Length: 162
Image (cartoon, rainbow, N blue to C red):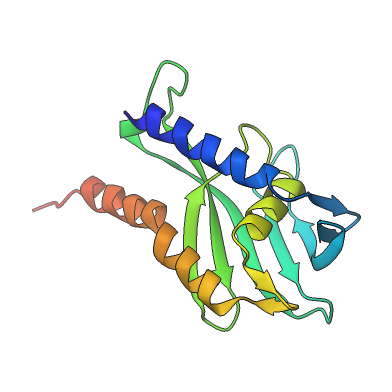
């Protein structure tokens, strides 16, 4: 059932992406030929696959910080994923506008283009600033499932000694 849901979400995401021409040119996020923001990557190395992405407006103001994360979830252990690793993206919006998490759509290595597509398709930036209603919708829709799940798993691992 999880796989079917994941496939449906992936197909919906792919269909939505194709509706807009999103690309990264240098450090510029371009949507239908218009620059909407800049993107910077930090910490993306072969030995440490975790990346931090900074999305800024044209004045250099930080709008969104996106961190690529993973967690081990025993319910996700399969023949193809023996460690149960789940990769996800954590979006932190500037000025305490919220935090949201979503399954990482990249199978292996996340690229700036993957992040730019999520930002563009979700319409998180409008007129060089965060789009308040879209950010609120994004936060409400995605929530913090992965962090919540990780805390739940940590609590279940606590052993009390008498």
